[in-house]
Amino acid sequence: IQGMLERKHGLQSGGKKAPVRSWKQFHTVLCGQLLCFFKDENDFLQQKTANAPVNILGAKCERAEDYTKKKYVFRLKLPDGSEFLFEAPSLEIMNDWVRKISFH
Ligand code: I3P
Image 1 (tube, helix red, strand yellow):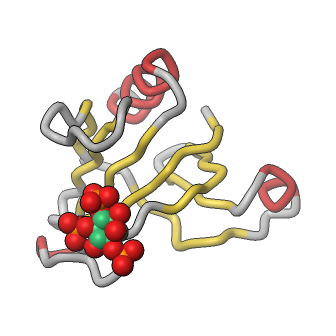
Image 2 (cartoon, rainbow, N blue to C red):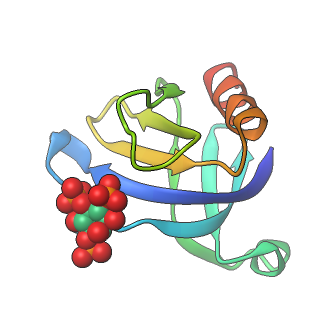
């Protein structure tokens, strides 16, 4: 699965607040157990990553019911205590990401 997602890095490893917590858009690609981030699809085709990939091995992924500022937001919790929020463009696309990350 791949597509544009808004991303917010909420917590860094150890559960500490991440220093930069603003929302940012990435062309996001799930590649095996790695979630990879590119500025846009063209950068993806050229393999120019915009940000460090996230290893989703052992991660928990579910809709962020408690986050009400945006629609279709899901949360990714990594075993190291870090946490990301992602906003998808639709409910269907959000569910697709959650399924594919959960059962990768
Ligand atoms: C952050 C930005 C985020 C906001 C975050 C701010 O500021 O406004 O949108 O998250 O709030 O720190 P900056 O752009 O200056 O980094 P929300 O959209 O979820 O409110 P936070 O500190 O509560 O994480």
